[in-house]
Image (cartoon, rainbow, N blue to C red; front, side, top):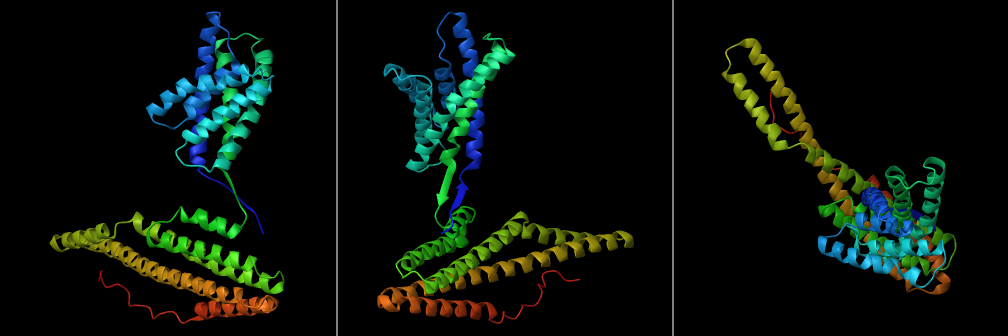
Length: 364
């Protein structure tokens, strides 16, 4: 079974990383002020706390709670005398766990939160090493404002990039992964049909996994995947047409055509009348094109209904195979695969409905 790796909520990750970068830079300025007052500055603590507070996308009440609770939480490794650099890694892990659990605009799964926390914590020591190299090579060990801002921002950047693991989702089935991703991009009736198709495919795969391994089961799985991909292809085509039609208001185009024709009828100049009529005719062709796209969208939606119904028939047929004799299941799977393939072929070879006449909304 092919694995599929998807990156979820990429925009959220990019925004939080930029905010973490700004939080690290602000922490650097605060560290400079503290050092001039002869206050001890813990680079890992300041950088991680600044990045976490800045990157959390929460309301002011939760942010206030984090402002109070994070210093206490990040001091736990120090209280437990955890050695360096493990202490800094623990601070990064704790801060990333809080942000992943409370400070995201979406709801990652617990395993994703854990993966992001571990990834962020693992990269914090590397960010601190990069800061040390920058201090020695570029700033001669002086904690100036520029050096502090760049160094703390580097630590925050590594911490933020480590949280990328929270946005990674691994699917054991590439077909199901594609359907889950596509479902988020659709709306309305097409989205409901796609969700139903994904659920049916999942049910069918559970049944096929219980069948005896062999050529019959492999053939059946291939047919089910092909049927489901056809649903996805139809849904994508429908979504593309939907976007085209939403980009243009058909009523506005119709109103413009009527307005141009009214102006052409009212003008007394022959050349001006001709130009207005040409403009109205050009918009009229666009209106007819939009009408044709609308009919094509209806046909695609009907095909989508039919393909989902075919997948439903496959699920019902699989129930019968599941209840059969174990010794005959292999042959039954192969027979069912050929039956489903022939059904899909019959649907694809079915004569298309007679085209309706071109729209007469616009006449010459």
